[in-house]
Image (cartoon, rainbow, N blue to C red; front, side, top):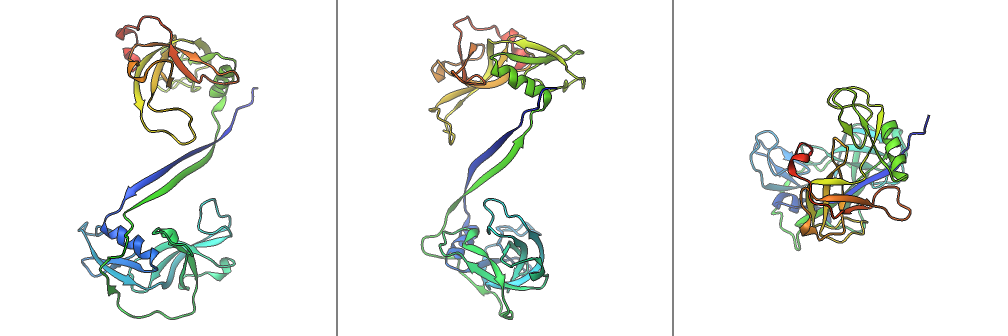
Length: 315
């Protein structure tokens, strides 16, 4: 039996958002070592602050300053920190109700082991040495043997010099992809510059890439069929935003291509033609690099465009 392939994959993108007045004040406050909450209509102090009351959905803007120490309300031990987490050594995730707040804030607690943390533990903020206006300005919490302040939260205007108005948060997912037997056969065939699909014994549709079973009929698809290599553009989009680590100049075209003999369109980049000349019905063929294990892109064949009726069911 042929070995099933696996490959490490990373999905990563920067998520950028603007901030309203409440979140702007909260993050700018952290930069200035000040923790702000917001007072709801019933008097509760919410930290981190929300722009709308979670109970009534009313807009709330009444900012108040709370303490930098608080009490652990619940916790979980993290024995193996992952990349990008607050601490590189084992730590506790804790929910901390800061003095003056009625809700809890999630962050890391720096303690030597799980025996050092318990519900009710008093803790305080350890500020980051360099602060930029982000939740990471709180480096972590540490145990604190001092009492609560007992003071009421003080009203705060939320005004700071040079306020933070937007943030960019990196989002990343690392995982191992296992394509299964059907797609492993497909990938091995691509490495030999052939494209194979699998035919459903009931509806006779040829799936490319193969899935091992027909998603319509629910029947195993074990009959392999070579398709293409040429095909027809069924629909497409023009990409105007350059992707990180992708050495392709924008704009370029990404298209759905129905390979000859296939019952399903696959997607690929179109090259060898100006982006504004790509069209539905364009006949294309694969282009391989010298050591490529899959087509680098598809280019026009020079054939007349395919009639719409020949691919309308594959759009």
